[in-house]
Image (cartoon, rainbow, N blue to C red; front, side):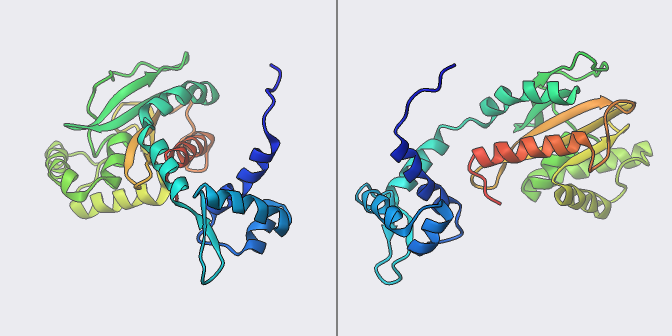
Length: 258
């Protein structure tokens, strides 16, 4: 398809806004211009127009430039229209093809982590999961991921109930105390992902990676499931790294900043 003509000066000027958006704070003209790859004189002309539009403001005392109220209004309007699940559903099909494993999306529902979308790989093994299923917090990657990032008071009762059931059942593949549960959740936060191997479903590896919004809240989990014979379970393996990359990009698109 032939590339449509645009206005080059608009695209050039946007680089200044892009630099300000990514900077940790206001910038001097020389630093802003250098980061945008243009001369200070050229950058100044753009900044004068951006100030008139309230996209940029200049501090009278320090002479530094920063994003203005119009940029904030545009950003807030964009964020208010974002739908995390919709964006994820648009991308998960390509990710499933890339990985070759079944993927799912989960959100926090009324009763806990709930599967809301399913992309089944042609080589998928049979798993007894359906849309709408609520995942356990201790034995599923999805549950562990949400438990690690949810408010403690929101998950504490369920964690305690599941811990008691696991103890009564003599489960040695699950944490045996709240101290072990807390250590498990800290491990999830360290890896920015949860993983179970042969825990929820026999012969199945499960990963879940968190997606965050602009307020740093976990809004959904991207889940991968596959046979232990086919899905790479390593933390530095292809499955985990691809999931993390996809989740990090989606988080960034939702306004999350590390």
